[in-house]
Length: 255
Image (cartoon, rainbow, N blue to C red; front, top):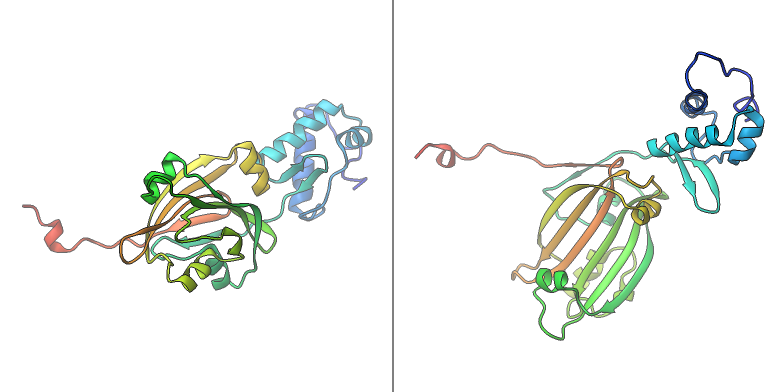
């Protein structure tokens, strides 16, 4: 660590000093000198070791945070970001996060933010087909796999489907299946988004990082809506794939 932040090696004519420091740290990350999860010294300590100004050190660190290679935790410090394995998710299957990860042999953890019963918002009334006086069970949690936060899930269900949100432990769909209320089909809408400060902090990525917003409305075989879920996925962790087939001749033939 002392060699990495030595004052030696900063050269005139080799570009701005903050870029030289940025490259030095990036090289250390690539070579494993700074492994995932390692903490960096405080900016003032790096400045003292390198002989650079704190402004220069801050610019170098902020650039690496913006790239997602470093993460800053409020009141804690700056750390090397964990390496995230990219996952490919098929859009043709109606599965839960728990099932997706179990199929890959990965552990699953929910960090609960809230589980409550509330009056529905106008959006929830429309999506769930609720009537006057109906209530909704709301679930908000961060979904993690192998210790890495991958998604934020915000689900709303009629209380006639989920009367006790506290009963949800790991898998919402597994619980619904015991009641005979598991969705059998769903409509999903996916859009790109830049993560806001709160969502980025929950997912351990820089504010403004690329993300995927997924809105899902799940239905029973009867056509009844049972689930309205809005999720945010890390853009650096997920690829969504769908199989496309050529339309039958009767649909392609000019009329």
